[in-house]
Length: 359
Image (tube, rainbow, N blue to C red; front, side, top):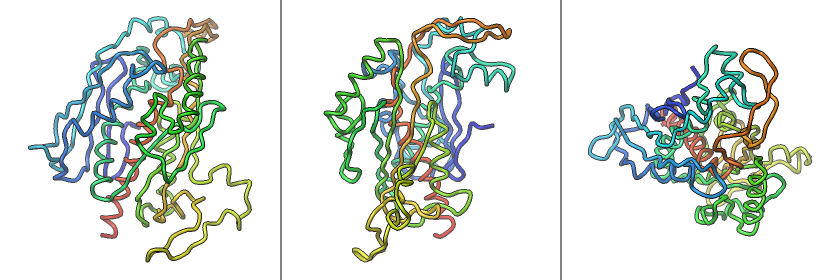
């Protein structure tokens, strides 16, 4: 339970952080889509550890292999299975965690639920599980781009109290990828990197915000009531490790406005209904309105820190736990492709559902 996501375009991820590997099965991908590992690897490279001095030093190539679901370079319409081998697993580094619960990790809650847990790097609760999501998301992104002209772009907009001012309609992939923190504002990026390095030197961690912009979504995607587009996006984003908050459009900042100030007024432009502002974030009544969809995801400071902390052991005794292991002082740079992947999975699922329902 809880390992699958989506209705028509449905994925199931599998594997643990220090097992043989991790992967995903994608069911519901339409046939005849040109697909190879080269379509998937770039996003995995953006997610992988060891890519810069401000992320975990774990060395993984994260090379993906497609095991099923394609023939002569095209999808068959059958389940697509993909996997990535774990190459730099070090389970022995977590031996102390076998008998102690790490603060703010899933150690205690997994033990409470299942009566057993994989203490080697968190097992299934590790962010390494997101490899399957990013691999599946790469397929979803290609479908959305080729068949619907939809572009999905994530970037780091805030690290702790350092915020970037970004034009959501003009920001480009090249700007985002121009620096290791994935903030499209170069001057702000330098401040963010400096802050992350300061915190890392102290053995601590820091959080922030990833913003995602989706251009080209047509009006009509989404469902009423329980399957609202923003509700599915919220679930997708809050399923990511270390995520703690989500808002769409004006979000929490909209409370400072009155209704008349906040409303997106309609006008006819270029032969279709448009809005003069976009505080709705491209979604109204749970259904896309044709404007740019944009939202923010809050990520907490990573729970793994390099300092001794108070905790409890498996026998129920108070104790302490030494800070050790490889960790991200800030998860945000690697979270960007994860956010993009989950957005793609939600949107491609709704695109397919809309086609089945409305033609």
